[in-house]
Length: 571
Image (cartoon, rainbow, N blue to C red; front, side, top):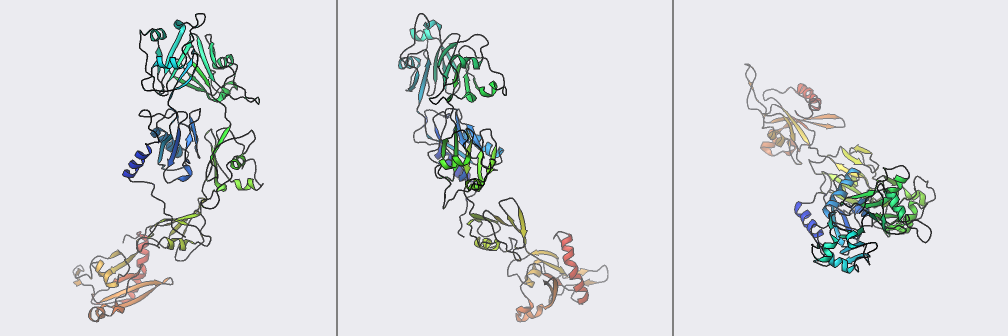
């Protein structure tokens, strides 16, 4: 295995600041700050340390409905939001849908839409025109070929005019004053829309049979206004091209209303809203598209026909990536436009063994994400080099810990290592006795545990003491502040700990082996056999100086482990 250490999710504040500053820059600067995203902008989304959720350059274009589609969370409305607001919305959606616990999201504009103003209504050449600094209402009228001033139908006194600013504000204009120069001609900003309309009419625009102005009576409803325009447009193949699910009504007072008129007409939605003079109704284009993202050959947005399934969309994307990295078709994610999310195993369907449930039909706005195959394992906790490591078929828990540099001495546990599998199951094992094989994506965690030695008897501070590799019996006695120098025995004299004797109890094969140590031979002659290295779990007893009752010592030593367990290691 070769290490591929994944960076920390929590980047330093300075690094985040540098990243956000860099992402605020685009190929051409925005026309004003703060910049509001709009239809036609191409945005890039990065979720730090989560490549499966990042867009692929050049990014995603904000569609006519103001939305973009993202893996696992489906469609979100980006129009009218700043990059920071869009990033916050994406992060919140990832948390709410329990896709990621703490996502760090950055959004930037990789390509700005053409900066234009729109002139619609009673003008000779309605359309979009390139914005110039200082442009006002008179300039826009001139670019649109002038007003339709016909004494029989549309005298200037009967025209209503207003500016719908890109930020949603609406401003009423007195047409006569503008034309005669007796009143101000408001300046237009990039993205503004200038509307000229007849009194008692509504504008019905977009993908309808006959866009234009239509007189309305009191109580005329939205469906009736669209009917006046001939209903939704019909394409060359007889297919409706207007989308009644996403009708937009821009009110004369500047408010905006989005209506799923298709649900309303089928009796499943709210009431059919009433339109008022001056309202602008827009029917967007019906586009039956779905997106496929992630580890596929050609990610993107593709049209589909009624009856197409997820594997048909995969075929349009030329299949999953092979080699390194590799797309994992067993964990494909389908995010519906209604917010529901499902995980699909597409391998069975591609082999002809799937069902309608495992390979569902597509609906407009669906997003399919193919994640990367998990050909790695993670080793974390108290090992020398935690991180991600390439998986090989013969990998075991012990070999993975070895690749991570092994357990940190006197910090990591070798007797309670945890393995969490990708299916959510967990197992705790003794690394010294068990060594099961690993699976791709497994998470091996070595928990914290301090090795200790028990020092009791006639020492100044009996108790449990942390063991370090190389510590000897004398070192552990010193940690307990050495043999007791004097102990009052309630009027029966004093007792002292023997500085030259020690009893070592070491467990082997389930039983304690007792060794009587003559420390005087170590102190005087350097006999290391009388001062052996301690091991985790040892029990060292310093006897009384005057007398040694070995039978009692043995009995007391055998009681110590149960006392340690009873008090949770606090003795």
